[in-house]
Image 1: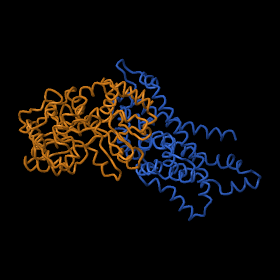
Image 2: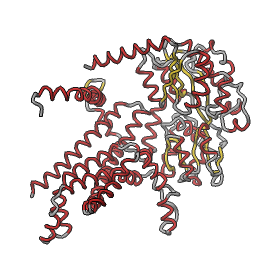
Image 3: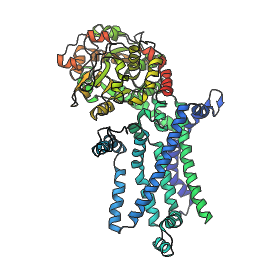
Image 4: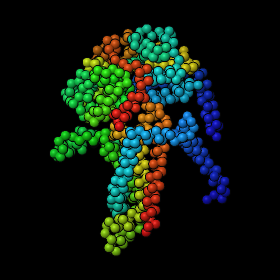
Length: 276
Length: 340
């Protein structure tokens, strides 16, 4: 783009220095702490971390909830995205606006709303009791279910947005063509829509999975200390136990999990492509 | 690169520090709550008296402690207010110096337990609070700490997380009700662990607790008296328990950072904060219960504070030393027995 490469480099330099000095370097120093012991470099901190049954529980809970939220939001997201792209342009814009609206509200406010809705005297319990489905209010708050509901609502819009933009790039006639050629709806989805929108699914899936794993506010408010996740555990290690080694270990695990999720999803997408 | 940045940063700091020193500045590190009232009742009047400027730094105790430790060699903070155990932790790390109590004209007016809670005059108590159980008097009656784990309250009680300031004292009192006064807290943690499913949540902030009470998620919870104002008028019949094992609580202290070079002004400020006038004003605003025994307030105000020699003498407090030395082990036990 630039006639002189040097000018291009010079323009990138300030931002690169800024990112390197104020982001990469501190992050590197922080993460390095997780490999340092009195006897030099070692991965023993990781062994210690995973030796604790409590940490294992927290790790698998985080993984499970992340995968569950990503999976459910993919299912719901495809339905919603398909409905949205089938609409005429004006309604599509409106629906898209409605989907993105929650993203403009602070997660704290959204999560507090769930505190009221899921409570013992909240909307859901009142509704179920009034209908006579249950006698005594269910305990939903401070359980994994509450965290799941909160995270799903928080991250579903990201999945829908990714899928909508992927579907908009899909050839208009692909679905009708498949139908005319005799494919049923399942085949249309599996052999036409899914392959054509897999990039959207990879992006959406990564965003939702990593978002759910690294969310702090929702598990802290809706789960509390009875439903610790890696993020809330990290906070506890730093602010209470002053244990920066364990905190660095958790940070490293979260980074590795985020990257692996992205690689795995990409791999899945390309595997399908090459099989065809 | 980094070196240049650090040098640049350091020289800017040095310059601004030099500029500020010219017009007498006192930098204090305090809890972030009620700062508007503190500004009005403490900082502004003091600035007029001393002809100096007060720079206020706020945050939670971990952040504030970290900052004091990071600037150990060139202290930015001159005086800080901390919980007794955080203050003792700072003292052990050599971050503090003894307070020259002889220079505090109001020192003799303090309740005895506030005078030297850490030893070596490392801190002076300026406020304390009782911790007991706030409960819905239309649903239950609470007259023992053991009631928190009773069948009547199963599924209707929240406990403070062990990581909060209220957590260990509350556990200690639950242990006391079981006939165990060992500060290892092994027995009460075990008991709470067995009943973990009956406890709605382990709260970390008293504001969170007020909301749970408001939404009828819970009927009872141990809480510091400083938060009582949030409960008493919530529209439900609320009561403050006087358990037969007694009430527990905590104290906050003022400390002087080591080698800050601003000791004289810091002492003057501490003395002002401890004065009968300021302590009365803070009590009347229902912010801090007075540590100055000469403070007199109306019955109505007293009912909302931890006030009076009688009340103070009855508090069963865990010592700062006990909390600091056992904190890690309590958390470890808690993490294996309770949150799992």
